[in-house]
Length: 81
Image 1 (tube, rainbow, N blue to C red):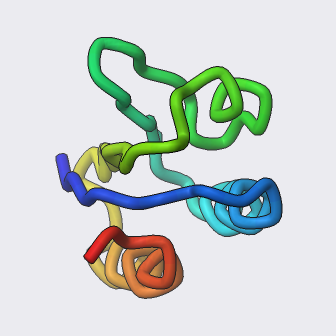
Image 2: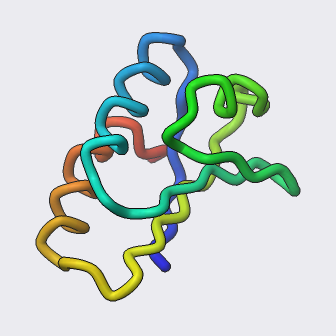
Image 3: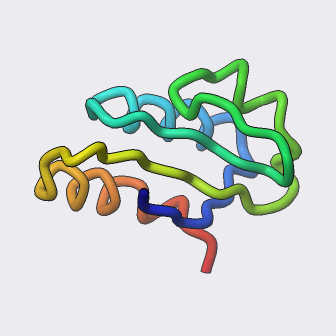
């Protein structure tokens, strides 16, 4: 499982993030404290406290490493630095 921190402070960022993760076959979750939602669900994401960074958890499940690298590259603009 790969984990990275991201920040989704604008509604437009949430929409763009969901569009990106939906193009990949991986199970992707967002974790904010004890709350976990499907990262492919706009409504789920908006139920989280987005004023703070959230953790993306990608379960590649023995999947394609190239696709995982591509996904990580696409979500890089959202990563919390």
